[in-house]
Picture 1 (cartoon, rainbow over the protein chains, first blue to last red):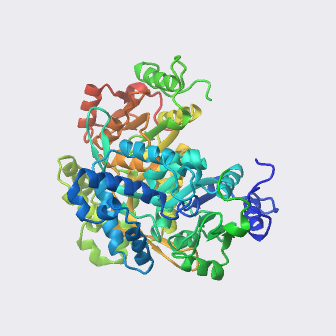
Picture 2 (cartoon, chains in turn yellow, red; picture 1 turned 45 degrees about the horizontal axis):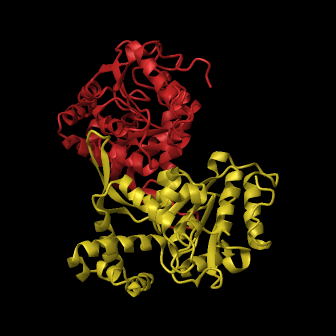
Picture 3 (cartoon, helix red, strand yellow; picture 1 turned 90 degrees about the horizontal axis):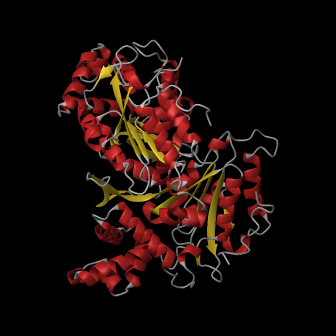
Length: 311
Length: 311
């Protein structure tokens, strides 16, 4: 156990709330400790464990794949999302997110269709190799650091502190489960079997080399909003004691983190540090409002963290 | 670690194959040990870890629920599967399985529709309480022992031996995931998060008591046949080193247990002991044939086990 837990968190009410929650879970306040097997903590990934601006890391990965496809098949350059990818038209992707926040998912569906087509027929092992290579070699477009070093150091420290206190940590991401898995152990000390996230459906094909699982061009589910508590249940069979998120898509997961008989912590990360990271609340309005009415703990990147990224 | 591993397995080639596999995985033969995190073992449940005759344990649970429904709503007594349940017509359920093995799933779909209707709208917590109470109180119809003591003692001993040697054990059942979860720790020392199985889809409903997840009358997937390797991948992100099953529905899972760079064990349980358990191969023809051609290890209940059930 670290001598000074959460050293990268500034002293204050947020850090106190986190440390108090862990102490109460362990019975250090004199109450009965929560059984170790019930100490489940779930973390959103994009914007909660790693940086999601100026675009989600997985979008960078997908853009490169769409560009490759458009180079190989020129007819795709006439269609979205390949046209935007091939011409570097990031505005199309930005406007898609703006429309999404306003409730219009037309272009999101167009992008999703492109993504699903981009990996149709690929084996899970080949997809893993592509994601692994990308995440270990590509550089963040504005921070100038490798993606592997774009995790928030204070959140990694929180994961470690929870593990030190008997918690089992899970990622519950809206992003692709199999995109995160190859690096979750190295970035977060979370093994691949504890990564929950979105997925396509798969086909199993029998053969004499152990069968092959390949991606089908069809979403199995998008692990966001009300799907998050369902996927957490499917994977863990439990209600978490701690959930951390940063956007409206995390509201049901934080709400689900409710136990009348045990301490719980709902942690919402506020991106308010344009100097060291980014400042934005678009897509987090409902979450911030619920944090106020439901007494969730809001962690301000600017005020509560002494550092943001690993040195 | 047990002093004499697999004490309930008779000395002979099957026991040797299992013990040799574990030793090779751990590098005790001088080869490099397989990293602990890769030591994944998956077990079918019905007929592999617990008894599935004269009917699957979950069918007994469902029959009681269907009977209750038919008592409360007499109009249901005119329709299958409620008619068969209410009149104790086990022949209808038996013929359904016979037709299933012959490739006709008409009545299987009728039963599945009844099961899905039987739990529509129930919360996951209420379902858990019902399954838990049933499994801890009901008695096997012919063996005269509680269901909690219908697990095969030699298989539980194998699970323990694997755990002692750094393996992570999973259940990969065609039966209901949430039906098995309440007892998996007590019966098998497998925690609920390592139970893979069939499931309905769910709805998440927001409320001020932490939200509620309820069963929808729609199958999410049936975890059998080619779906088993897919669900194992989804949960673990790995190919197993060991898979154990007893029927045709386990063939893809055993086939998927293939690693050119590590030892693997494909274990098929043969029900050939009418004295101590049951004797049947219906529904296992393809699996037994593959065991021969692909050199899978067949464990005979009659010959390889000194005991079947816990004392």
